[in-house]
Image (tube, rainbow, N blue to C red):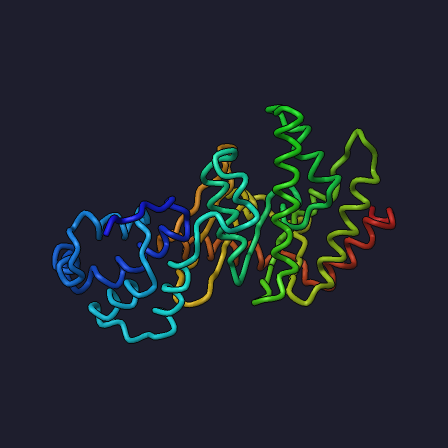
Length: 288
């Protein structure tokens, strides 16, 4: 049978990586390939997400590896069967940075999302007006058409907040400095943005805390980060923002380090109730 080549989406790569994690402590790739009646090249490409693998093949491989975690095996098998490009983001493939597309796919599937921003409002909590300001007024200007596409993408990402199947839990650490932004288009943008934050903070699946101006700057000196957790057996992922579209990692040591960084920022953020009070003061224009 001719093996179908699959687009190496982030989830296709995650399927392969999880199968590799099961195999490596037990046997060499050549031995595993022979058990499946494959050559080593095919197994290598499966593990790198380059070849599509069926649910039945996932179960066979896991059986050879002695994986007795039925829940994990069925989860991997289900994801392996998903057609590439099935999400709302599919039309943007090839039109945006690959790292950004990976991030969007991960974010859309996450069970937990923890965000720490040093300067701006997190993208998932930005109002439409704020999104447009951040994209159209960026130092590196883009065409009007591309700007509109990027605005639409950022707003579409927010649909994860209203997901009804396995609702996502979001914990956002927002810097108070972001509430003091001034825009040439007028302060209505920030009023709408603060209302958006207040609405989000009233959602049962959103925890929003403000990092006060009085916080030592070292707590926010590490840049923007997003920590994503997933259903069993997928490993957590941390994404670090940068002007090139960001990078993400599943390496346990790096994830553990950035989790400690997040916890440090969380430790000096205002409690939820005090954060809402501060947002209301900004909205009323009575904050000193």
